[in-house]
Amino acid sequence: MVYIVIMAGGRGERFWPKSTRMRPKQFHKIASDRTMVQETFYRVYPEYGREEIKFVLGKQLVPLLLRQLPEIEEDNLILEPVGRNTAPAIGLAAARIEMIDSGAVMVVLSADHLVTPKEDFLKAVDAAVGVAETGRLVTFGITPGRPATEYGYIEVKETYETSGGLPVYEVVQFTEKPDESTARRFIESGRYFWNSGMFAFKTSEILASIERYMPQLYASLVRIQDASGTKEEEDVTRREFGGMESVSIDYGIMEKSGSIACITPEFMWDDVGSWGSLDRYRQHDAMENVVEGDVMLVDSRGNIVLGEEGSVITLIGVEDLVVVKEENRILVCHKDHDQKIKEALKLLSADGNRVKYL
Image 1 (cartoon, rainbow, N blue to C red):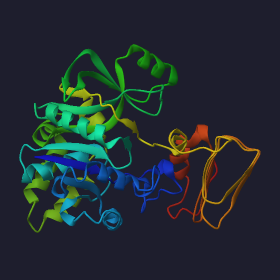
Image 2: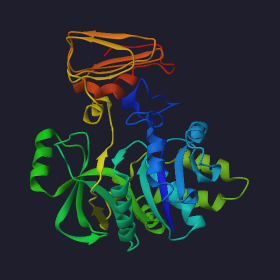
Image 3: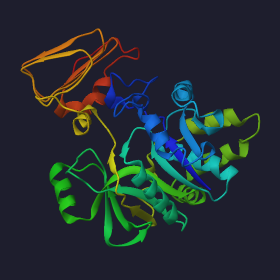
Image 4: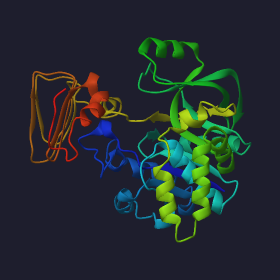
């Protein structure tokens, strides 16, 4: 059986002030009239039945998820006691699924990515599942449309096979976010793809890889499995998960394994990683501004301004700013610095009211 595992526990800090700990980015309408987690769910549903879809997230986000997706029930949820990055989260999902359906294939998606059209996406999922069933770990590599410095890259061999009509390459190596000149060189070579953070593999195979490359994580997952169905299950899961190292699946497994396949789909993909990404798919006015809410602009060009009804934002004589108001929180930054929002958040106190200055 094939399971769709949607990672919905991210914090989306670069989308502050809309994205907060209790309502992160994936629960906002960033890319369409649906929230991003709704878009992700309906991208696979009803083609994949409710029982085949699992969400990985923290307990504090469950009420919000159930309100936005009434089709989902408690048995669709795999709860993280604390956030520990994607390797522990995917490992936990694989361990849970392996217990109910040994040898199943799981397709891992992020709840906050923009993917279109649905038909091409489902075609790629089917093709990736076909490769995963052979025992390989599969990543989705996106053909780069620009020398992006905010994405990781995947280098592949020149030769390829096909699955479901799509090219499937053998991975040479993963490279973290490069500078612009390196990204241009990657693209010119024709052997690099963006790392989308989407995967497909058998639960047994990813668990075997975790055992080989992350033995401490594997030992914790085994203890969680052993406690499943007992009165100690919740305590064991909390204790083991809390002690896990925070590591991405890319760093912990994919960069080390010698059996990685890269499928190259035809759909459009964007991880919508920061406010500046709205320029790529939101409508612009005559002065190239992206505007939402009650906004007045005078001699201003190339700005992204998101306000609220009943609260007017006015910009005069400025260019290339991001201005976002959400309740009592306001962001003003240059587009070139929207990746630094996470740094600014570190300077806020726990209650978000006391500000230190950069």
